[in-house]
Length: 320
Image 1 (cartoon, helix red, strand yellow):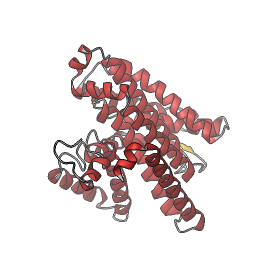
Image 2: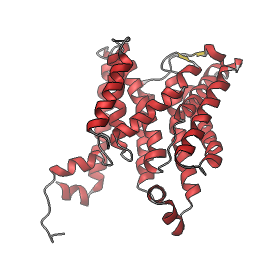
Image 3: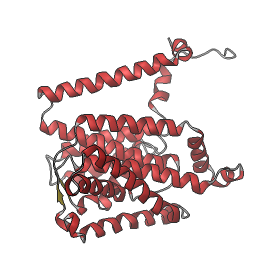
């Protein structure tokens, strides 16, 4: 069977497409039939949006090795851009999502060009400063509601979320296995050696930073039209820290790990909402226990495909 997949890759592609269609159809049917109620739909949306945010930071930190803690700033840029496009300019939601991505990418380029000359803690502080500038600016702009925020219609559907996830994962996986992706990994491992073989570290890092910013902006557009109200307080340091936890807990460098951590922590956080008095304490204790017993993250630097390889028959030594 494995040889069949290797000689005919279209069978594997067809299988993936079939699985995606079945998954989409099952969830859509459950939503339409009422088996998944309004609460379950909100949880589903929160999981999908957090997965997008985890992937956005995975591109910057996991692939490019740049320690950024300002993803909440790009999330806010995407959320408010889509909100203005739909409510102030009265344009379609799909166009608002596109605008959120474009503005976030431009903002990523604007921030990345000067700040990516920094490294480590200095870069983290600079990106945190960017996120705070965005938040404080939104607090003082009456056009977007100031501290009261904006009330928005519920426009995000399961179809929007599903297509966004498929698009983003396809884009990131294609980028990771492309020449630019390998150059990005080379810069992450050893910037000086990568530069010595002709790779421009500045170009690679800014490209990854802008790509991650665009994905976070897309997540912001979906977020804004899921929960009816957006406020500057939703995009503070704690949100950036939460996104960072997704990537670190899942395993830095593992797209599968970041995705898994985002799903598990979103479910855990949702469940703990029933215990508001001790929610953050339990959440923090869970994180501490996981990091004590699994400091490299849930999957380390491996992907789901690597884990499945243990079930494949081993080839004999010397046999190709």
